Length: 162
Image (tube, rainbow, N blue to C red; front, side, top):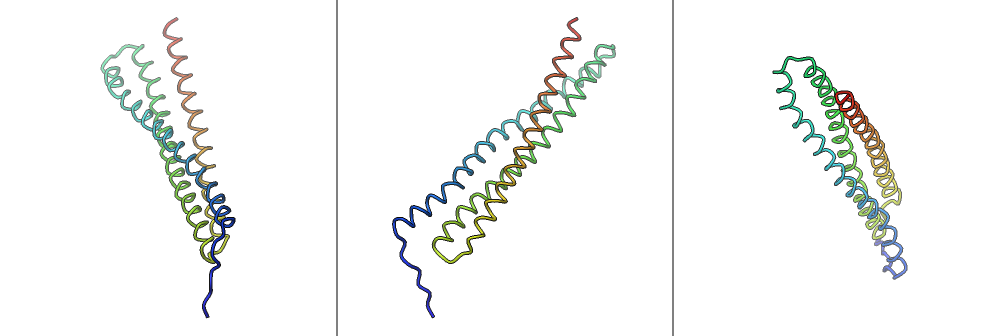
């Protein structure tokens, strides 16, 4: 017994393409977040690399002011490392979300052309949205750590300028 698939009409084609646009918008959002998160990760790694020569210089100096600055830099180093780890995890989540949104778009197209279960694109889209949400929450926490580091550095600069 042969199953015949009806020829697509203009209306059904437009409906499928309209449905496939939603994942495309989410794909673009993920791409934008991946780009900015990658930039933030690069800056966090560069910040760690900038601290190394400064710590070596301060370790050689034995005065109390150098010890205070070394302590402040070590705290900043811990924060920068925490930020880098969070950004790496957020990037992994964003890449996962991107993959699931692309999968959703492909599954929607296949679903329209065949008898693919309609729940498959829905599940893929929900997983992608969950990953995007998780990455966004992680990026919020990372930005709070970055802001706290800036505040601490500003407080230190104010304390030595008095």
